[in-house]
Length: 176
Image (cartoon, rainbow, N blue to C red; front, side):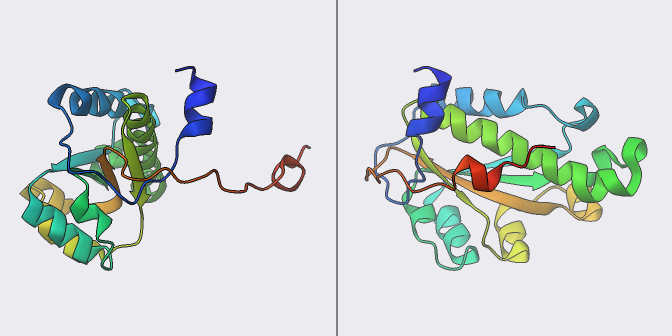
């Protein structure tokens, strides 16, 4: 599919079929996230792949009972890893660039999922501590204060939502 068509056709999916995501499709999604641009190419983020039903159910609870997270066969949890870019960028790297790195990587993963014929939904509403408990980051991340930034639920779409209205460019874009 052409890129312009891909971004036009992509939808947030909150209902998934039970069909598992093939390993090669998941690998393509993770590879896309890995090549996302990042501040200083330091990739100040981590990705946790959650496929076990019990862990996905716990993520759904941590995300304020958004049960589609448990229904989707894969959840990717993107966390900032601020110490990776602090030496080069200081506080701005810690507070902003690590967050940007994680969200750019998630965007690449979301578009790669669509390119693989999969549905996904970006989840930003969750309890940080509860998500951290589910993914159990390594000691190096716990000491650095990892921050879950987004959960991306991925699977085969069980719904086909219509396009949503968008703001007109005249309202959105400000030319200087």
